[in-house]
Image 1: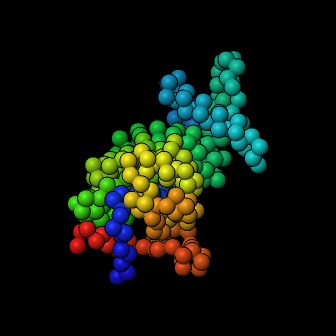
Image 2: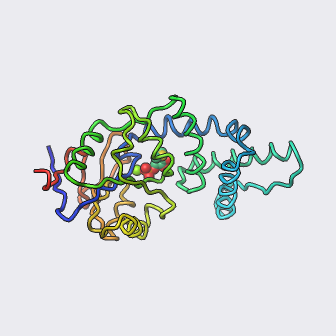
Image 3: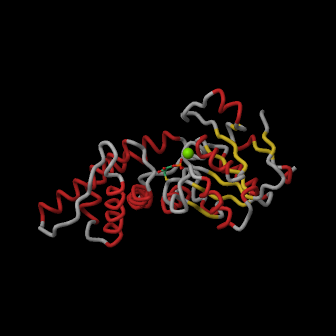
Amino acid sequence: MVVLSVPAEVTVILLDIEGTTTPIAFVKDILFPYIRENVKEYLQTHWEEEECQQDVSLLRKQAEEDAHLDGAVPIPASSGNGGDDLQQMIQAVVDNVCWQMSLDRKTTALKQLQGHMWRAAFAAGRMKAEFFEDVVPAVRKWREAGMKVYIYSSGSVEAQKLLFGHSTEGDILELVDGHFDTKIGHKVESESYRKIASSIGCSTNNILFLTDVTLEASAAEEADVHVAVVVRPGNAGLTDDEKTYYSLITSFSELYLPSSA
Ligand SMILES: CSCCC(=O)C(=O)COP(=O)(O)O
Ligand SMILES: [Mg+2]
């Protein structure tokens, strides 16, 4: 087995979710189709609720920022003209959500609505989150060795907690010391990693970030965060240069913590 030694200065392991702890197939084949199939009915049922109105406002603001993009779907402001107007508005939100999802966009607005929609499905036991089999044993071992474990995903913090709270391994939320999402910044921006370190109360070089996306790894590395790229079944392929440049692991069990020896 290949072993990657974790530098002694690392005290925090920061984990991506999709493609790192969890198969991309679970996200693409279960989580995302649930949104596409249920978004219209969800909006019709919850429209009057404060939370839903906040989600729609955020999506409308995002749609205004996206107006210059090819195929962007605008969300008009309500004219208060009753039933037909409402149905048109709901359809615009549905079309906007489907357009964003067709591009796998990671906007905070989209991720917030998705998190709220998944809540009912997880609570009702309609979905259980999948984790690669090496994840839970490794995280337990790291924590026993004194490491802190945090999550940084484009999925909203609320969605992250749903996944960890309702997994095929049971409720494993207690294994995580804290969560970050795009509210702290996008994962391809170095500044996000500096803000995460500051929020945790450590230096960036105390963090090891595990992700499947090399653009994220590169941004983290620019902020002086240690990185390893996780290669999992179903992940996008890496170029030869990326394979040479980055430390690669195919399982969390390949990480060797000197402190746990
Ligand atoms: C944690 S919510 C489900 C996954 C999701 O919506 C997503 O965008 C995952 O992105 P990641 O940053 O974990 O690759
Ligand atoms: Mg990922």
